[in-house]
Length: 344
Image (cartoon, rainbow, N blue to C red; front, side, top):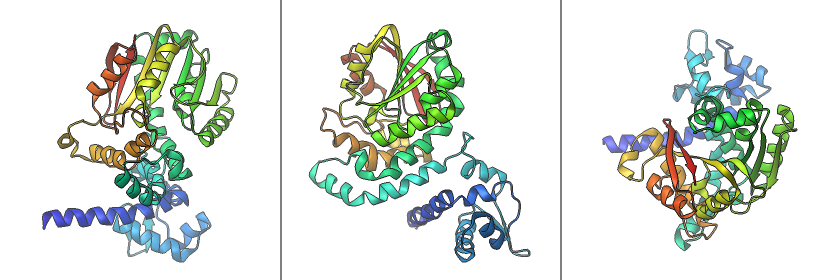
Protein backbone atom coordinates (compact mmCIF):
# COMPACT_ATOMS: atom_id res chain seq x y z
CA UNK A 1 0.00 0.00 0.00
CA UNK A 2 2.86 2.36 0.71
CA UNK A 3 4.26 1.72 -2.76
CA UNK A 4 0.80 2.12 -4.28
CA UNK A 5 0.46 5.53 -2.63
CA UNK A 6 3.82 6.60 -4.04
CA UNK A 7 2.89 5.53 -7.57
CA UNK A 8 -0.52 7.23 -7.33
CA UNK A 9 1.31 10.40 -6.23
CA UNK A 10 3.63 10.06 -9.23
CA UNK A 11 0.64 9.69 -11.51
CA UNK A 12 -0.99 12.76 -9.99
CA UNK A 13 2.24 14.73 -10.47
CA UNK A 14 2.36 13.67 -14.12
CA UNK A 15 -1.14 15.03 -14.71
CA UNK A 16 -0.47 18.14 -12.64
CA UNK A 17 2.66 18.87 -14.66
CA UNK A 18 0.51 19.81 -17.65
CA UNK A 19 -1.34 22.40 -15.54
CA UNK A 20 1.98 23.75 -14.30
CA UNK A 21 3.24 24.03 -17.87
CA UNK A 22 0.07 25.89 -18.83
CA UNK A 23 0.59 28.27 -15.93
CA UNK A 24 4.07 29.05 -17.20
CA UNK A 25 3.12 29.43 -20.87
CA UNK A 26 0.07 31.57 -20.12
CA UNK A 27 1.86 33.84 -17.65
CA UNK A 28 -0.43 32.94 -14.76
CA UNK A 29 2.33 32.52 -12.18
CA UNK A 30 3.97 35.76 -13.27
CA UNK A 31 0.65 37.59 -12.96
CA UNK A 32 0.13 36.24 -9.43
CA UNK A 33 3.68 36.93 -8.23
CA UNK A 34 3.66 39.78 -5.75
CA UNK A 35 0.02 40.60 -6.49
CA UNK A 36 -1.40 39.40 -3.17
CA UNK A 37 -4.84 37.75 -2.96
CA UNK A 38 -6.72 37.65 -6.27
CA UNK A 39 -10.11 36.37 -7.30
CA UNK A 40 -10.37 34.23 -10.41
CA UNK A 41 -12.02 37.18 -12.17
CA UNK A 42 -9.13 39.48 -11.28
CA UNK A 43 -6.54 36.97 -12.46
CA UNK A 44 -8.45 36.43 -15.69
CA UNK A 45 -8.49 40.18 -16.30
CA UNK A 46 -4.75 40.48 -15.58
CA UNK A 47 -3.89 37.70 -18.02
CA UNK A 48 -6.57 38.22 -20.67
CA UNK A 49 -7.80 34.65 -20.20
CA UNK A 50 -11.27 33.16 -19.84
CA UNK A 51 -12.36 33.23 -16.19
CA UNK A 52 -13.91 29.76 -16.18
CA UNK A 53 -10.64 28.21 -17.31
CA UNK A 54 -8.66 30.32 -14.83
CA UNK A 55 -10.91 29.19 -12.00
CA UNK A 56 -10.39 25.54 -12.89
CA UNK A 57 -6.63 26.02 -13.19
CA UNK A 58 -6.57 27.65 -9.77
CA UNK A 59 -8.44 24.69 -8.27
CA UNK A 60 -5.76 22.38 -9.66
CA UNK A 61 -3.04 24.63 -8.28
CA UNK A 62 -4.62 24.60 -4.84
CA UNK A 63 -4.80 20.80 -4.95
CA UNK A 64 -1.07 20.75 -5.74
CA UNK A 65 -0.38 23.26 -2.91
CA UNK A 66 1.24 25.61 -5.41
CA UNK A 67 -1.39 28.27 -4.74
CA UNK A 68 -3.21 29.00 -1.46
CA UNK A 69 -6.98 29.61 -1.28
CA UNK A 70 -8.97 31.64 1.23
CA UNK A 71 -12.56 30.28 1.18
CA UNK A 72 -13.94 33.25 3.12
CA UNK A 73 -12.91 35.80 0.49
CA UNK A 74 -12.68 33.25 -2.36
CA UNK A 75 -9.25 34.61 -3.26
CA UNK A 76 -6.03 32.93 -4.29
CA UNK A 77 -2.42 33.85 -3.55
CA UNK A 78 0.93 32.68 -4.84
CA UNK A 79 3.31 32.95 -1.84
CA UNK A 80 6.60 34.72 -2.50
CA UNK A 81 8.49 31.51 -1.79
CA UNK A 82 6.48 29.72 -4.47
CA UNK A 83 6.91 32.61 -6.91
CA UNK A 84 10.67 32.26 -6.56
CA UNK A 85 10.35 28.73 -7.92
CA UNK A 86 7.62 29.16 -10.53
CA UNK A 87 7.51 32.81 -11.62
CA UNK A 88 10.88 34.58 -11.50
CA UNK A 89 13.32 33.24 -14.08
CA UNK A 90 16.05 35.56 -12.81
CA UNK A 91 16.42 33.54 -9.60
CA UNK A 92 18.50 30.37 -9.23
CA UNK A 93 15.53 28.71 -7.52
CA UNK A 94 13.46 28.91 -10.71
CA UNK A 95 12.78 25.41 -12.05
CA UNK A 96 9.69 26.02 -14.15
CA UNK A 97 11.65 25.70 -17.38
CA UNK A 98 11.73 21.95 -16.97
CA UNK A 99 7.93 21.76 -17.22
CA UNK A 100 7.97 23.38 -20.64
CA UNK A 101 9.88 20.35 -21.95
CA UNK A 102 7.00 17.99 -21.11
CA UNK A 103 5.11 18.47 -24.36
CA UNK A 104 8.16 17.49 -26.38
CA UNK A 105 9.03 14.48 -24.23
CA UNK A 106 5.51 13.05 -24.02
CA UNK A 107 5.00 13.80 -27.70
CA UNK A 108 7.99 11.61 -28.56
CA UNK A 109 6.64 8.55 -26.75
CA UNK A 110 5.83 6.70 -29.97
CA UNK A 111 9.30 7.35 -31.38
CA UNK A 112 10.86 6.30 -28.08
CA UNK A 113 8.83 3.09 -28.03
CA UNK A 114 10.11 2.26 -31.49
CA UNK A 115 13.70 3.11 -30.54
CA UNK A 116 13.58 0.89 -27.46
CA UNK A 117 12.47 -2.01 -29.65
CA UNK A 118 14.80 -1.45 -32.60
CA UNK A 119 17.90 -0.07 -30.92
CA UNK A 120 17.66 3.14 -32.91
CA UNK A 121 17.56 6.63 -31.51
CA UNK A 122 15.51 9.80 -31.32
CA UNK A 123 17.34 12.97 -32.34
CA UNK A 124 16.77 16.36 -30.76
CA UNK A 125 14.95 17.56 -33.88
CA UNK A 126 12.44 14.72 -33.53
CA UNK A 127 11.19 16.01 -30.18
CA UNK A 128 9.79 19.29 -31.45
CA UNK A 129 10.78 22.92 -30.79
CA UNK A 130 9.57 22.91 -27.18
CA UNK A 131 12.51 20.73 -26.18
CA UNK A 132 15.21 23.26 -27.06
CA UNK A 133 13.13 26.10 -25.62
CA UNK A 134 12.52 24.22 -22.39
CA UNK A 135 16.14 23.11 -22.02
CA UNK A 136 17.34 26.69 -22.42
CA UNK A 137 14.85 27.93 -19.84
CA UNK A 138 15.76 25.10 -17.46
CA UNK A 139 19.53 25.68 -17.45
CA UNK A 140 19.58 29.50 -17.67
CA UNK A 141 18.91 30.32 -13.97
CA UNK A 142 21.65 27.99 -12.79
CA UNK A 143 24.21 29.40 -15.20
CA UNK A 144 23.34 32.95 -14.15
CA UNK A 145 23.77 32.05 -10.48
CA UNK A 146 27.11 30.24 -10.56
CA UNK A 147 28.91 30.28 -13.93
CA UNK A 148 30.78 33.56 -13.48
CA UNK A 149 30.64 33.64 -9.68
CA UNK A 150 31.91 30.10 -8.96
CA UNK A 151 32.65 27.90 -11.95
CA UNK A 152 35.04 30.06 -13.95
CA UNK A 153 37.02 31.18 -10.85
CA UNK A 154 37.48 27.51 -9.98
CA UNK A 155 39.24 26.88 -13.30
CA UNK A 156 43.04 27.25 -13.05
CA UNK A 157 44.10 30.54 -14.64
CA UNK A 158 40.99 30.91 -16.80
CA UNK A 159 39.37 33.93 -15.14
CA UNK A 160 42.56 35.99 -15.46
CA UNK A 161 42.79 35.15 -19.16
CA UNK A 162 39.19 36.16 -19.71
CA UNK A 163 39.75 39.51 -18.03
CA UNK A 164 42.84 40.20 -20.15
CA UNK A 165 41.21 39.04 -23.36
CA UNK A 166 40.75 35.42 -24.39
CA UNK A 167 39.22 33.43 -27.23
CA UNK A 168 36.43 31.05 -26.19
CA UNK A 169 34.52 28.32 -28.02
CA UNK A 170 31.19 27.37 -26.43
CA UNK A 171 30.36 24.00 -28.00
CA UNK A 172 26.72 22.89 -27.88
CA UNK A 173 25.73 26.43 -26.94
CA UNK A 174 21.99 25.97 -27.50
CA UNK A 175 20.18 29.29 -27.13
CA UNK A 176 23.47 30.94 -26.15
CA UNK A 177 22.70 31.82 -22.53
CA UNK A 178 26.10 30.61 -21.29
CA UNK A 179 27.93 32.33 -24.14
CA UNK A 180 26.21 35.68 -23.72
CA UNK A 181 26.55 35.56 -19.94
CA UNK A 182 30.33 35.20 -20.21
CA UNK A 183 30.53 37.90 -22.88
CA UNK A 184 28.68 40.40 -20.70
CA UNK A 185 31.12 39.93 -17.81
CA UNK A 186 34.35 39.70 -19.83
CA UNK A 187 34.19 42.43 -22.51
CA UNK A 188 37.87 42.03 -23.47
CA UNK A 189 37.33 38.45 -24.64
CA UNK A 190 35.77 37.05 -27.80
CA UNK A 191 33.23 34.24 -27.76
CA UNK A 192 32.19 31.79 -30.45
CA UNK A 193 29.10 29.63 -29.91
CA UNK A 194 28.54 26.46 -31.92
CA UNK A 195 25.50 24.20 -32.11
CA UNK A 196 24.22 21.71 -34.68
CA UNK A 197 20.62 22.92 -34.19
CA UNK A 198 19.98 25.86 -36.52
CA UNK A 199 16.88 27.24 -34.72
CA UNK A 200 18.91 27.38 -31.49
CA UNK A 201 21.71 29.25 -33.25
CA UNK A 202 19.21 31.76 -34.62
CA UNK A 203 17.79 32.26 -31.13
CA UNK A 204 21.32 32.72 -29.75
CA UNK A 205 22.14 35.40 -32.31
CA UNK A 206 19.00 37.29 -31.34
CA UNK A 207 19.88 36.98 -27.66
CA UNK A 208 23.37 38.40 -28.27
CA UNK A 209 22.00 41.42 -30.11
CA UNK A 210 19.41 42.08 -27.41
CA UNK A 211 22.13 41.84 -24.74
CA UNK A 212 24.36 44.29 -26.59
CA UNK A 213 27.28 41.89 -26.99
CA UNK A 214 27.00 41.27 -30.73
CA UNK A 215 30.38 42.95 -31.25
CA UNK A 216 32.22 40.19 -29.38
CA UNK A 217 30.02 37.12 -29.84
CA UNK A 218 29.39 34.99 -32.93
CA UNK A 219 27.19 31.94 -33.35
CA UNK A 220 27.51 29.31 -36.06
CA UNK A 221 25.85 26.04 -36.98
CA UNK A 222 28.51 23.37 -36.42
CA UNK A 223 28.76 19.90 -34.94
CA UNK A 224 30.81 19.26 -31.81
CA UNK A 225 33.38 17.15 -33.68
CA UNK A 226 34.19 19.70 -36.40
CA UNK A 227 33.54 23.21 -35.05
CA UNK A 228 35.78 25.79 -36.79
CA UNK A 229 38.60 27.94 -35.47
CA UNK A 230 41.55 27.29 -33.24
CA UNK A 231 43.96 28.63 -30.66
CA UNK A 232 41.11 28.86 -28.14
CA UNK A 233 42.04 29.68 -24.56
CA UNK A 234 38.87 27.98 -23.36
CA UNK A 235 36.54 25.41 -24.88
CA UNK A 236 33.32 24.75 -22.98
CA UNK A 237 30.79 21.92 -23.01
CA UNK A 238 27.77 22.86 -20.90
CA UNK A 239 25.57 19.86 -20.12
CA UNK A 240 25.95 18.46 -23.63
CA UNK A 241 28.94 16.09 -23.84
CA UNK A 242 26.94 13.09 -22.63
CA UNK A 243 24.33 13.69 -25.36
CA UNK A 244 26.85 13.01 -28.11
CA UNK A 245 27.18 9.70 -29.88
CA UNK A 246 30.91 10.32 -30.11
CA UNK A 247 32.04 12.50 -27.20
CA UNK A 248 35.60 11.36 -27.91
CA UNK A 249 35.53 13.03 -31.33
CA UNK A 250 34.28 16.25 -29.73
CA UNK A 251 37.09 16.18 -27.17
CA UNK A 252 39.67 15.37 -29.86
CA UNK A 253 38.49 18.40 -31.82
CA UNK A 254 38.71 20.47 -28.63
CA UNK A 255 42.28 19.24 -28.03
CA UNK A 256 43.23 20.26 -31.58
CA UNK A 257 41.57 23.66 -31.23
CA UNK A 258 43.05 24.59 -27.85
CA UNK A 259 45.87 27.09 -27.46
CA UNK A 260 49.09 25.70 -25.98
CA UNK A 261 47.94 26.37 -22.42
CA UNK A 262 44.20 26.23 -23.09
CA UNK A 263 41.56 24.56 -20.94
CA UNK A 264 38.29 22.71 -21.39
CA UNK A 265 35.40 23.35 -19.06
CA UNK A 266 33.04 20.36 -18.99
CA UNK A 267 29.76 20.62 -17.06
CA UNK A 268 27.95 17.35 -16.39
CA UNK A 269 25.03 16.29 -14.16
CA UNK A 270 25.91 15.47 -10.57
CA UNK A 271 24.50 11.95 -10.58
CA UNK A 272 26.08 8.59 -9.91
CA UNK A 273 26.86 5.75 -12.29
CA UNK A 274 25.47 3.49 -9.56
CA UNK A 275 21.64 3.57 -9.92
CA UNK A 276 21.02 2.95 -6.23
CA UNK A 277 22.79 6.19 -5.34
CA UNK A 278 20.34 8.28 -7.36
CA UNK A 279 17.26 7.62 -5.23
CA UNK A 280 16.58 11.29 -4.47
CA UNK A 281 14.73 14.04 -6.38
CA UNK A 282 17.74 15.36 -8.32
CA UNK A 283 19.01 11.89 -9.17
CA UNK A 284 15.54 10.79 -10.19
CA UNK A 285 15.09 13.82 -12.42
CA UNK A 286 18.36 13.32 -14.26
CA UNK A 287 18.04 9.53 -14.56
CA UNK A 288 14.49 9.82 -15.87
CA UNK A 289 15.53 12.45 -18.40
CA UNK A 290 18.40 10.25 -19.53
CA UNK A 291 16.08 7.37 -20.36
CA UNK A 292 13.81 9.48 -22.59
CA UNK A 293 16.19 12.11 -23.98
CA UNK A 294 19.93 11.89 -23.37
CA UNK A 295 20.42 8.23 -24.29
CA UNK A 296 18.04 8.25 -27.30
CA UNK A 297 19.73 11.41 -28.64
CA UNK A 298 23.15 9.76 -28.43
CA UNK A 299 21.84 6.52 -29.97
CA UNK A 300 20.47 8.50 -32.92
CA UNK A 301 24.03 9.58 -33.82
CA UNK A 302 25.28 5.99 -34.29
CA UNK A 303 28.57 6.74 -32.56
CA UNK A 304 30.81 4.50 -30.47
CA UNK A 305 29.29 5.70 -27.20
CA UNK A 306 25.81 6.03 -25.75
CA UNK A 307 26.56 7.30 -22.28
CA UNK A 308 23.32 8.61 -20.89
CA UNK A 309 23.68 11.49 -18.45
CA UNK A 310 25.12 9.44 -15.58
CA UNK A 311 28.15 7.53 -16.93
CA UNK A 312 30.30 8.57 -13.97
CA UNK A 313 33.55 10.57 -14.00
CA UNK A 314 35.77 7.54 -14.65
CA UNK A 315 34.13 6.87 -18.02
CA UNK A 316 34.36 10.51 -19.06
CA UNK A 317 37.95 10.78 -17.88
CA UNK A 318 38.96 7.73 -19.95
CA UNK A 319 37.36 9.20 -23.08
CA UNK A 320 39.13 12.51 -22.49
CA UNK A 321 42.48 10.78 -22.06
CA UNK A 322 42.02 8.92 -25.36
CA UNK A 323 41.41 12.31 -26.96
CA UNK A 324 44.73 13.64 -25.65
CA UNK A 325 43.34 15.51 -22.65
CA UNK A 326 45.15 13.81 -19.78
CA UNK A 327 44.84 16.44 -17.04
CA UNK A 328 41.45 15.96 -15.39
CA UNK A 329 40.34 17.83 -12.27
CA UNK A 330 37.03 18.30 -10.52
CA UNK A 331 36.98 22.08 -10.24
CA UNK A 332 33.76 22.55 -8.30
CA UNK A 333 30.60 20.64 -7.47
CA UNK A 334 27.01 21.76 -6.90
CA UNK A 335 23.84 19.86 -6.02
CA UNK A 336 23.06 19.45 -9.70
CA UNK A 337 26.38 19.62 -11.56
CA UNK A 338 30.02 18.61 -11.58
CA UNK A 339 32.40 21.01 -13.30
CA UNK A 340 35.63 19.59 -14.67
CA UNK A 341 38.84 21.46 -15.57
CA UNK A 342 40.51 19.50 -18.39
CA UNK A 343 43.83 20.14 -20.12
CA UNK A 344 46.43 18.32 -22.13
